[in-house]
Amino acid sequence: MTQIEARLAHDDVVRGQVLNLLRKGYSVKARLEGWFDPPEEINGFIPDIVARRGTATLIVEVKLGNDDWPKLFAFKRFVAQHHRTLLILAEALQRDEPEAELTSLRRFVERSRRTKLQVLDSTVS
Image 1 (tube, rainbow, N blue to C red):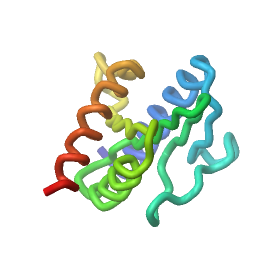
Image 2: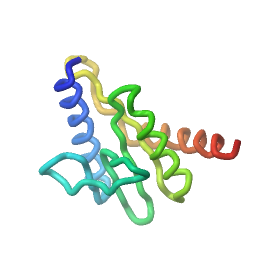
Image 3: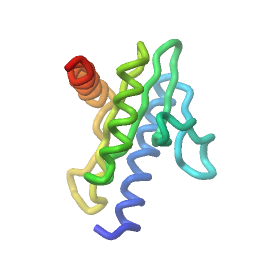
């Protein structure tokens, strides 16, 4: 996949997640230039999406590759220190995959809960 194709796939996932979150009643800031206000920096990095509903906060990051680990680690540290905040990791799928569809928010939240527990365990040791 070329860099342009990867960026397009990434932005497709971000747009889909933003629409899903808006339907669920979240207020959203997203890194989609010209569409939304961008999220604030978290531990030196800007996430793809920050969504809030009541006192709950979701940080959504669409993973492009293995080079994302410093950003993901920074977000995991933030989540470990902030109650009612979850980190949701999504993968940018190739556009030509016939079965490529967005994973539901419920599956993302479940993954992020496991991630949060792993972060908490790793900060204790």
